[in-house]
Amino acid sequence: MASSDIQVKELEKRASGQAFELILSPRSKESVPEFPLSPPKKKDLSLEEIQKKLEAAEERRKSHEAEVLKQLAEKREHEKEVLQK
Image (cartoon, rainbow, N blue to C red; front, side, top):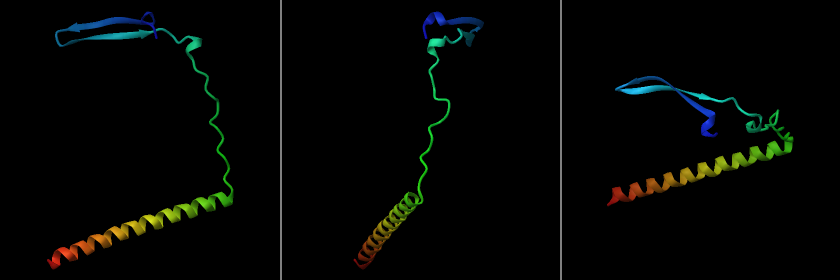
């Protein structure tokens, strides 16, 4: 946007500051980007693909739970060692 597209109209000027209004020129036809009219279509998932995704999510959950339990066991073991000293 070039500076010639903007007009400044001064409204008030005070010791505490000033108020002004910016007047923008209307958009030109060249500056309007072309957008698709509808969002892209989502791919329909088959029952098999949905099942694979559910199984992968279940594996991630089990893996995460195992990792958390492992860390908890290590922490408890460390606590036992500290208490025995």
